[in-house]
Amino acid sequence: MKSIKKEVSLGNKKILLRLDLNVPIFNNRIIDTTRIDKILPTLGFLINQNAKILIISHVGRPKGKIVEKLSLKLIGEELSKKLNQNVKLVSKNIKEINLKELFNKNDEKIIMLENIRFYPEEEKNNQQFAKHLATLADIYVNDAFSCSHRAHASIHEITNFLPSYSGLQFDLEVNALKKITSEIKKPITCIIGGSKVSTKINIIKNLIPKFDNIIIVGGMANNIIKYMGNSIGKSLQEENSEKIIKEIFSLSEKVDCKIIYPDDVVVGKSLDGNPQVKELNEIAPDEMILDIGPKTIDNINNIIDKSSTILWNGPAGYFENPKFANGSIKIAKGIIQNNKSNKIFSVAGGGDTVSLINSLNAINNFNFVSTAGGAFLEYLEGKELPGIKALS
Image (tube, rainbow, N blue to C red; front, top):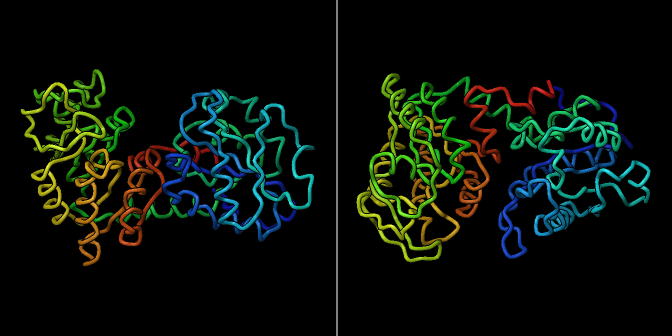
């Protein structure tokens, strides 16, 4: 890959900059700015080079339709504050914009286009859409490592039409993950949680030969709890996952990797309900699993204490509600304690995990924190990411 840092002349060049500004927003307020903070060095570098910056990004999953609440307006305002620069949001249909409409005023140095996922062509990796985007700039820069496991138009196809480079944060992510995969120390424990079941359950299968322990928590663990013959009430679950779970346990036995899942859980009758600790055979039909229980927390922290490397992706429960955040917080504190005494090398990845660590003001207590979730796991899995391939 060629890094934008090594490009000699950027003065007055128009840079099409792909960022991942998919930050958590609640009640019209950004509740975690990590993804914005991480890309400020790239923006600062381009500003100092006197480049003109055209930002493309997304927030949420509008599925190719315009969804007002998923506008980038709030994010543009936050960027403007942090950079102390005017960031102009252009809401016009991207397919109707032409180069002559952009950067007409002297103070227009940073322009942001509206949510790229408002257009179905983006996720379809549409060639014509990418070609049109390319007409708006001189150079393409990908500083969205966390989106680079997606073969989307603004990540993959775009590189066929413009000189293409990696951004500063992209370089940091790839170099850190290269170090992890080449210098990893055993025993290795991977903690995988979160609610995106289908996107991770196959990844687990591919990670098993590389790790000593895989701890499954969050929404994904519900499938295993059910597979083991327990009722999971109205908990989040993935349909038709029995076959893959059977394969996971079968493969783990062959390569001597332990699969750990909850021994006890915390349930509620709703996301705002009162927490109750339950054994796996006690879950009622009107209850949902929203966190791991105390026995499970103790077991996980014992495994962390015996590990040399920890990779963590995804919270242990519905941490957005403090009533169901205890499991995730205790895992974080277990890792931090070991990290402070230099007993482990710790890496955390994924938006929700980063938000949680940030809420504990503990970003600096991990060896590396990646804003990427799926891309982070797929890179560790050894997959070739479309975003990296396109830049190579």
